[in-house]
Length: 290
Image (cartoon, rainbow, N blue to C red):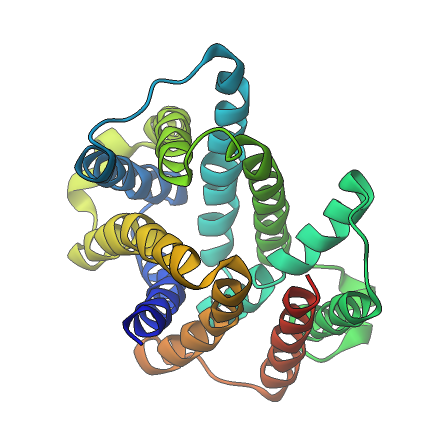
């Protein structure tokens, strides 16, 4: 019972990352937010690694390029797209676009690794893509065809692409390295890359002018959204298995929309509800048939 409650809490925390990110990027550069988030997350993960495993295992030379790719895809590029998109896209809308991750992963895994696509999985993919089209077009397909996809939406789709690379790379890496160690190293490498672009953005000159709410958002993202969320989710995977635990991820956009409505005053529109329902249903069907 407790593990199910912990998984639900984890999804609520992950839903809250969209609100925390949206708040933070209003008074802080997206690259600076990304660096601060993962600097905090890296320190927290290092503490967890030594607390749970007694040490952070040394990488073998053959693992290095793969872990660097994890850091670049899942931390560096994902963060740039995520926080850049949240500057212009509402938190609830962003959460539903990012919810496409499992669907796109299924498509790419089929193309690259020849993983079979069952009829149920194909139905889930089609349902999610229709839902995403409704969300991105705001229910007006003619506007989407005439004006194209907006910059914020494109950035969030880049977020999805980055996570696909991270996930598929992680499948290979985590055969030989524990998820905690792989995530810690990915955070360390990704944070080092983010430091360079954050300094170029002006973090060293502007950090004292950042609003307190933005710092609260960054702390939430680093400690709860990254380190604690990762730990609790993998406790759930260990206790009930990855198939059952992954079903809970469908709750993330639900929490994100609820929090965005209550905390940010974002409206819940009919296209958002309809498109969101289709995305979540499609993701459920895709996961269920895995």
